[in-house]
Length: 73
Image (cartoon, rainbow, N blue to C red):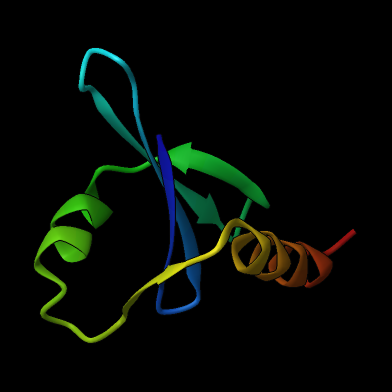
């Protein structure tokens, strides 16, 4: 099961496997790729910052494409 979030402007993907292991991958603006980054887990679970939005896969993909377009070539 995969859930998609925007934390501020950062796309974050949370995946849970059949054994219940949770993996978070956040978009890294410097590299233009996704990195494993567990620091977003508590932000998503608590959502006390007002920055967390659960989004559809399409909205997630659009946010990633926007950020990738800003990457220097």
